[in-house]
Image 1 (cartoon, rainbow, N blue to C red):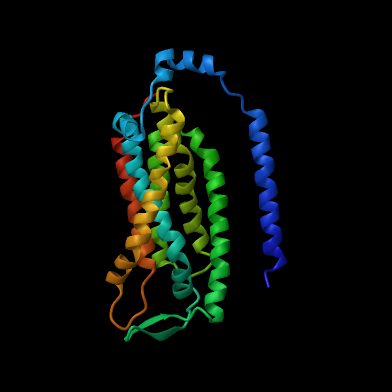
Image 2 (image 1 turned 120 degrees about the horizontal axis):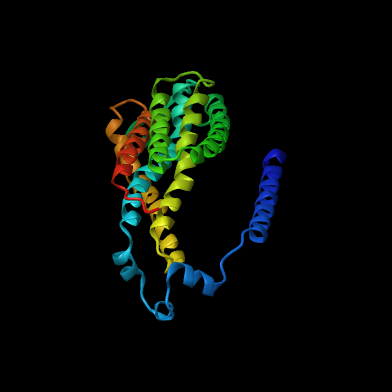
Length: 270
């Protein structure tokens, strides 16, 4: 049975989404096509130009690739979070029991996912993700107050990296709130600043196509992280021991700090 709380949360979420879309559609005013072309210096010949995705990538502004590099480390880090937080919290905080399983004749130790401790950990992870969301909303109101956009980007990612790494040392369920508030800082910056920097670097032509291509810097890192995460975790796992999933969250923190370092190579255009 699906609890009514889950069912109603989906209905409420759908209603909020619909209302936000309607509000945005009615309140956001766009340039008429002719005014937009004049503002960006797009000639009639430019609008007639036929090109393809690969040519656009070749002509892409440098910010497209440098911000994309930062994006790679950020989204790979969050893919690790979504994949390994449950196991981390279950083992490190709720002392979930470990059981032996046999796969293809190989015995290995895994967490008992049917145990009460694991189920409780899963519920708590949902609360931690809610705390992260609250932290991101609060930090999103602070980011515009920081005049230097690149500094805001770097600071946010470093705070998120500290949040991820701190999970390794925390074994109290409530203390994890601090970690996930810091992670929320990185999340807020990731959702706003990359697109702001990119759109400022674009001249107006093929804007929609470039923004669509830029979404590849969100999905490709997650595909890579999902494909290689298990291999990396196996390297951390000793014989006869349960996989230390917390190490993957530490790696996520390292990735965010590397991403913060890569922000320095972005050349912004006002």
